[in-house]
Image (tube, rainbow, N blue to C red):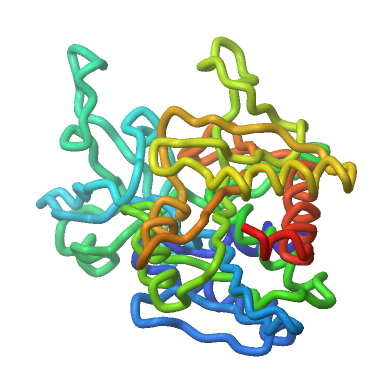
Length: 333
């Protein structure tokens, strides 16, 4: 589990440029599925045929990450940029970023009298170029950089870039590798462009037309000093979503996940998130509507270069996913 997670977080994959990470997933799952394909938007679909059941279950974990896209190269060789996805201004200055070809840079900030006025327009990326001509040999307008890669196993707690949502992707990979059989038709979709509006899940769900859908993503915690009060915490198990800003989980899915976790002795907690959304937001609104829910992995410091999860929470998520896709009760939803 840790090995595949390190591979996935090491792959360059901002929204719209997810191919490197998709190749990692393909190499891990090509022997564990009946079909594998990419749709027209770029979603990677892993299909496992079920037994006698005609029920179609769609599991979605987004494969993209946030980043910075270059908009202008100045005469001195500095790069101006705009965010791709939910990049927080405070997390960008003096951080290292990397482009797809390995070119690295750090972000500087113009002198500000009031730091509260920090804006992306006041920031620039420095790749060490002496002037515009040299910079243009290395980087072009439209290129995207992501947080520099790092991976630390701190006694079972993982610190890394892009755990949002490579942790969810790792959960689906391990699920498919370990799942012997399922009574239901199973579609594991590694969605693209979630960070810019849950776009991939929308087209994938329309194409697959599932009977039930479940997003697998990370969620914020409330267990750090003076953090916003919320119940989610590292080490307390998989988080069964009740609601976020994009979706209210289908009550039968929420209740079934709770029952399965209780019966199997899997650690879990309930999640109510006041902001943010997952692929469930798009999937539930597809066609005439799809009963949808979300299973989350608690994560500290989301959308920073050093996100943190607990390995036991990830393991609990994988166990609960296996219970969900294998049970007969899911057909009653």
